[in-house]
Image (cartoon, rainbow, N blue to C red; front, side, top):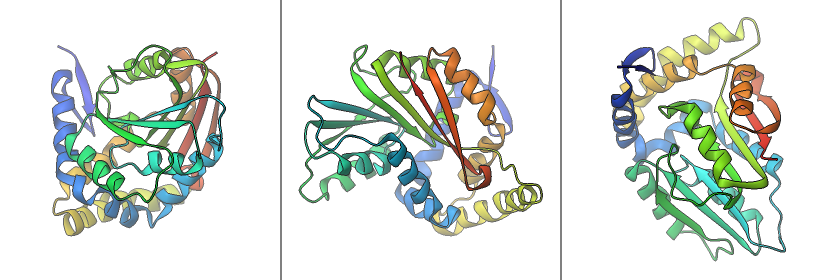
Length: 251
C-alpha cells in the first residue's frame, strides 16, 4: 500500500482525496474571504498576472475553449471570460461540490456576460473532456492538492489541442534570506488563527500551509511539467517567491 502527503502527514494514497475534500467542504463558503485575509489581497494581483500573461484574445475567429481546473469559486474563470468578447467558453472543473456551488452562485450574479462559464464536477486526474478539446488549461492553487500530480499533468496534456497552453499558479518557496523565516512564522501561526476566526476552523488552513511546504520548488515542478509532455516551460516568481506562475505549451 503506497502513501501520499497530506500536509506533513503521510496517509494511505486512497484516503488523501477524501481528506482534501473535507478541507474544502469546511472552507468553501469563506474561501475567497480567507484568501483576501491571508494574502492581504495579493492573490488578486497574482491571478491578474496569470491572466495578463495568458492574454486571451478579445475576438477570436474560432471558438476559444478554456478549462479552469480546481477553480470552483470562479476567480480565474471570470477573469478570463471578461477578456473575451465573443467566441469563448470557459469550463470550470472542480472535484468539490461545495466550491462549485459558490462559483455557480457567483456566475448567476454576473452582469450581461458575453462569454459563458460552465461548472462541472470533475477530478483533475480524469476529466470528462475529449482529447485535444481545449485551447487553454489553467489551474490556480489546486495542483498541490491532487493525489497524483503526474497523472493530473498528463491529463492536462491530453485535453489540450496541439499548440494549446498550460498555465499554473501555485504557492512556491520564498527565496529572500530573512524573509523566509518571517513568512514561515506568519504562515504557521497567523494563518490557522485567522482560519479559526473567519472560517470557524483553523485546521484546514494548517493543512494548506503544510501542503505549500511539501510542494516542489519551481525548478522541480517545471521538470514535472516537461515529463508530462509539455514544451517551452517558463516560470515567473511572484512576490519574492511566495507564489510562482508556470507556463507551457503542447507542441
